[in-house]
Length: 145
Image (cartoon, rainbow, N blue to C red; front, side, top):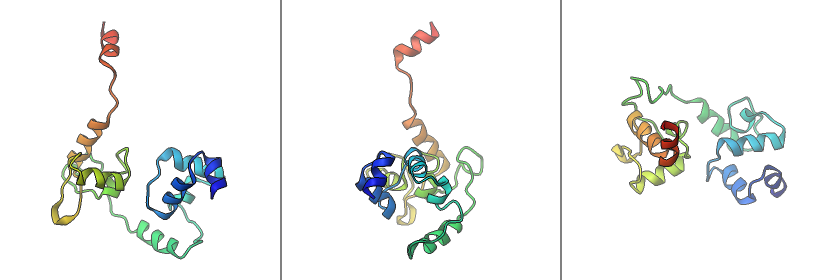
């Protein structure tokens, strides 16, 4: 595991947390791991037909295939659709765990009906605007002048 982490350019502890599901991995880390292992990204993200190597893999694969149709947050159907943190993480720069933590800390808009954190399409758009990288005021002035 240490060797794989070193070759992929991440720490062994981060790799361990990602492997056990205690932490999410960004697209860049997933691509580096796939490249290091010389496998398609879908093989390490349960996106493809993977051979089960652990007892947990079949359960995770079954859970992954039981997904529901999720509308895009900017669409009329997605405006008031309630996204789980895992679904919202597809559209935002944070993992589901980070979204939950930020919601509990009241740092981002969310819905907590029924003791479950969910995000509407409006919440996702607002969070996206909050996290958008904007040019410095000086840079914007130079471009406009």
